[in-house]
Length: 310
Image 1 (tube, rainbow, N blue to C red):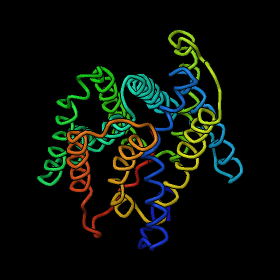
Image 2: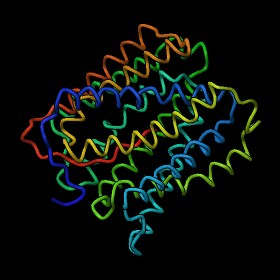
Image 3: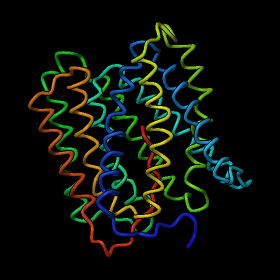
């Protein structure tokens, strides 16, 4: 079997529980980012997170004997993808600094809907079906509830939400581009090189726009930074793609609805963010849309996407 093709074994109970665990980890990432902002600048946080993650993934690749070298014709593709990655994360971190983690998580989970729309035009044979259209409609109905929420108007959150929405659109574009070129790469190569590429730009942004790159360091700030770097961006990447290779995307993506639920719940529990009726309605519609989009027959050939934590 080729290295990058999944074997599509049936998901065991233990594997299912581990997938739930991973989805909770990914869903809570925005909460960790917000905690980091208490002691680190917005772009400083991004630079430290992805610098650490890139080093961890590189060490993992060397220890496990994976080839990190790029072929000559892959360099331009990596540069394009890495540029989109840098823009995407810069916008997401900036937007999240002006919004709530719960709202950022909900908006981040619009990525599948944007991808479906873009893939219809840019990926041959990937068309919007009635089922996918219903999922898209449900997802974006959730966004409407977010933007008419009185809490967002009263606290001026709309600017941050709009910036995050732009980040999600760029993320979707980068994913569609990745789907066109991923066949020539090992999945970890794109993640490792895009994080390495982004770090100098995050540092430049930090020097230009962070009022204080480091205001204070305490256990919560350091812990939140290590969580983003080593748990979601490193361990999460390796674990998710290992599970994809063994069980296939159809089985794993049946669980992705857990991510927005975890993000909203932990935003309220850990950060004390208000969970209004309209936010709950937005959550219901977005989760419903995700379930509709990912409801597939087991006989349908699975794809092999790269899971990257935003």
